[in-house]
Length: 102
Image (cartoon, rainbow, N blue to C red; front, side, top):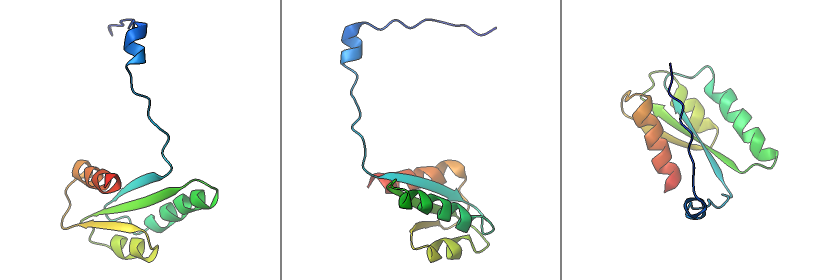
């Protein structure tokens, strides 16, 4: 049976919580391993959001794919990061986050 606890915050705690400023640009990190069949469509759907007024920048992180994933992503003229071999989802996503924050 799960333990449920109530959290009571004083007003002084709530006033010390920083408020995040809205960002003007959003990044979509797309980890990709052998996604040649779908990467183009996913990128196009994200770029459609840009046309609809949302400033979004897709970042494909090719995780050592052995198919045409990297080549197809590069055709879309977006940022594509290529890892030399399959590192797994964790490092792949972290690589994309690091790039987006720089």
